[in-house]
Image (cartoon, rainbow, N blue to C red):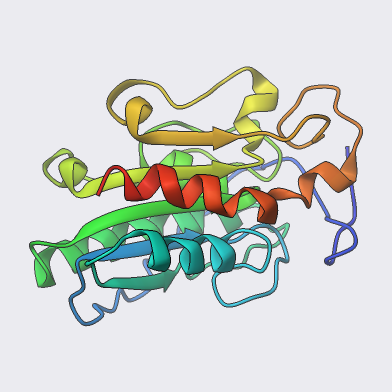
Length: 213
C-alpha cells in the first residue's frame, strides 16, 4: 500500500533491512520539569509536527499547571528510507539518556505520530518491524530510566494494523489513538483523511499526559 501525503497526502511504504547506524549527537537542553519528546510523521512539517506534536505541546503547556515544559524534536529523516524509523529510535533513546543524566528530576512525555509512533514503539521495546515505515528495534530506554517516562502518546500507530499494541511496563501510561478508517493503523481502513485528523485529539492527549505528571 502506498498513500501520498504532503499535508494533503502521505507517502507510506513498508520497512526494510537495516544498515549500521551511527548515533547522532544528543544535546541536553536546559532543565525543565517535563520534556515533550516528539517524533513527527512521514514528511510532516512543523516544529514538533504540524498535525500532532505542535498542538499537543501547546495544549500540555496550558494543562500542566505549575510545571515548566520544554520540547525536543527527534532528529531523524521521517522519510521513506529503510533506516528512517531506526535512526529516530536511536536518537530518541540517546536524547532521553543524555537528558536524564543532565536533569535528574526531569520527566518525559513521548509523542509519536505515524512513522513517529514506530519510533516511540521501538524506543519502549515494542518492535515496529513489518509495519508501514517500521523497523526492528535498535535501542530502548534503559529500565532504570523507565519511571521518568510519565506518558506515551501515540497517534495513527502503524503497528495496530498488525494487531499489535503497547503492552507491559508502559501500557497504563500509553494513549494510543487510531481514528476510524485510518489506513495506517486500521487494517482495511480506507479513509486517508482520518490519518490527518489527529490535531483534533490534542486536548485529550494533553489531559491524559497532564494527569500522569
